[in-house]
Length: 258
Image 1 (cartoon, helix red, strand yellow):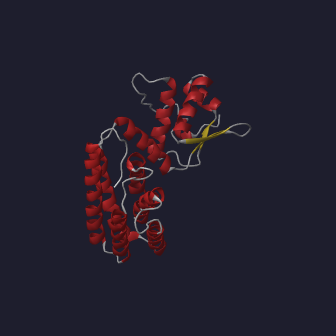
Image 2: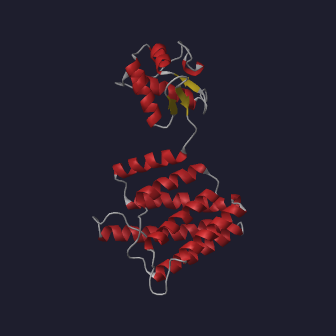
Image 3: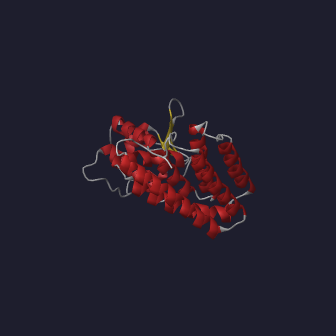
């Protein structure tokens, strides 16, 4: 049996979920071993046969557990000769998408989303001023320039492109913080709240947003953490007020934008 030692100890205590299935027991123990740092990315967990023998279950149950672990992004499975399950490398974006789905299904309100977004983005802006690199600065400036190219004298001639640039700028600020937890949370909120485009966007509003983004980029470049946090707070607070107001006016219109 090639089962990983972290879950091969017959004396290891298992804490199954009440009313859980046999496959749930396997999933639960693998997760416990992962959180206890007994399992690491790349570790060979075992084959379907190994798990079936260790937990005294059928191979069908073991296969169901492995499928659940794979769906949760915990293991990668190789089939065929020399195959089996290995602990996967972390994929934060996979978690972000899963969280976004649950937030959407839970029906979180616009106000809840914007409160959380303000908290996340304010801290991200502060940390970006402290931790960002010259490459981060260049990326922020590039995104601002790309958005500027989409604004005409009398209209925004590429609303979808401008909206994407705005989303990417906010994400770039979070990534410049070099805090992956903040990045994952912002990605989740963007999945839920950020639209493909804003049909009501005017050139005046678009130019004002770019002015704010430009000032944010400057504060980050100057390492002014307090200033970056303060400006981001005002910026996201304004966005939140507009979104909440528009949502109240059009409760069935779907997702809205700043």
